[in-house]
Amino acid sequence: MPGFASHPDVPDPLLVLDPRVLPTRVADRAFFAGPTKTVARRLLGGWLVRNRRGRTFGARIVEVEAYLGEKDAAAHSYGGRRTPRVEPMYGPGGFFYVYPVYGMHYCANVVTRGRGIPEAVLLRAAEHPGSPPALLRGPAKLCRAFGIVRGDSGKDLVGSIDFEIRLDSAPRREIEASPRIGVDYAGEAATWPLRFFLRNHPAVSGRRVSGVTRRSARSPSSSTR
Image (cartoon, rainbow, N blue to C red; front, side, top):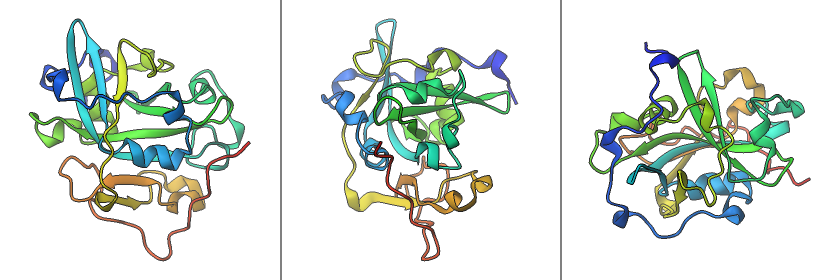
């Protein structure tokens, strides 16, 4: 597998699109400051957009996961953990939190809530209308296609000339929920239904129908402090 040395920092030309097809509403600070589970659901159907050298690149978000901060054993900020890498999670909502995985991939999160409440939403998968579904199926592929790297962590998505989120929420009837993927180490938190995705969408990276069962633990509300 290619490592960081070959990880692009520019978007894939396959993601180019005409900006006129994008929704006109741009996510503002108030949008990102909402409860994390609400923000996660409302991101579905919206577009991650990157503007570079006069061209627009974008894809519609189809799968996300919510991470509820200090009380969530699956979150990097669990228990109040605060390191230089995790620091963007402690800022106001609307910033990127990007972290490396296995020395070869990156994962991109959108920070939510207010300053000092370290919660975020992982962008798991997206679709571009003219590209194969596999191009953005999974958080690592999404970052590679968009050219998202460690240096993008801490970038502001509000008022940025580089990245932004355009909002176009999916119908509630199309949204499914399940436990998150790859967090078996997190104890009870591993069962919380905090993965949200568009039902049966071909770009979704995990199960495409609900994985929630009656035994799944109900996730707590976002922090209120």
